[in-house]
Amino acid sequence: TMVGITSNATTFTMEALIRAMAPINTVLSALEMECDVDICALESQERFATQIQSLWCNEFGPSKRYLRNLLRRYIHKIDASEVEPEADRLLELVIKCSQVSDALPDATETGYRSFSIQDGVPPFHIRVYSQHNDVALRLWEAGGVLAEYLLEHPDLVEGKTVIETGAGVGLTGLVLAQCCSVESVCLTDYTALCLENLKHNIATNWIGPPEVITQGFLDWQVYARDDCRELLSTDATFTYFQQADVLLAADVVYDADAVPALVTTVWRFLSQGGKAIFATTLRNQKTFELFEQELKRYNIQCQYEDPVKIDHLPNMFPIYHVHPRSDVRICTMQIPETCC
Image 1 (cartoon, helix red, strand yellow):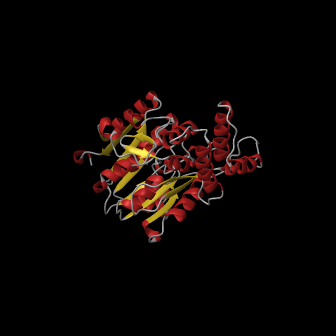
Image 2 (cartoon, one colour):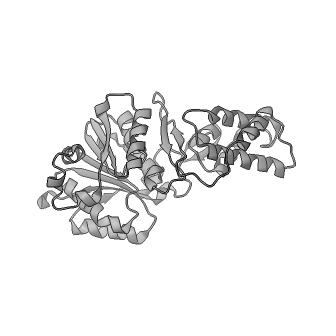
């Protein structure tokens, strides 16, 4: 049995937490649980340093800033216990860290959050821009929950063509392509850097037929326009949107100003006879209420999954450190046949 931080019967080792760029306190707690001796003892120092060293030059490792901050926090813990940093590897890392700039956060700095979710499935390496102000370049809780939910209910997407709006870094869609036997999935977003990062994450993680997982530009403001069919008549992503069976979205209900265009886009998709599955983290109650009001205005029916069942899904991703999974709502949307 592995020793580490446990959540919903899933155990995450220190290594798994570091690879996922989990909060530093969580990582150090896992180290403490894994060690048979004091966390600051020489044996623990060696264990910690070996793990950091293996990731320092790893092509798919966390950002240097994250590893440096983790090392500094551990050194501070050692100093506070009045024990000397003795492990040779740890001292080598201190020297390496001193060569990393202490400059202000760099918006262009990248790192990988990596996850091993099933035996026989290669780890997912998701590139993120953790210092960037574009929210689409980071990983959010609802994306992990939606992936976990569909892994438990693959029949919802198996053999279907799927399109994801607001796909961000692409974790959910990559999991679907790798583990849920979808016919195809198109990951969409709208900022140039996000689309470039999506392309990178697909290339990094997908080795199957290229037509199974693609990425494209989708702007709700354009899709909500009455003349969108004329504007987008030759657009490949819009063609896919019109033909897809399932629309997915995770953590897209956060900007009240964008909600009307988002819901109009959802309505346009559902009016073709499709189904939508949304995962939403409850951050701002007023924004969520506005979203529900807009859905009612379009006569879109929502069926919410039991929050208790969501919180008891197998926990594949150690990312629920700010908002617990109990804060995430999953709903399936359709337009009643009598209204179509």
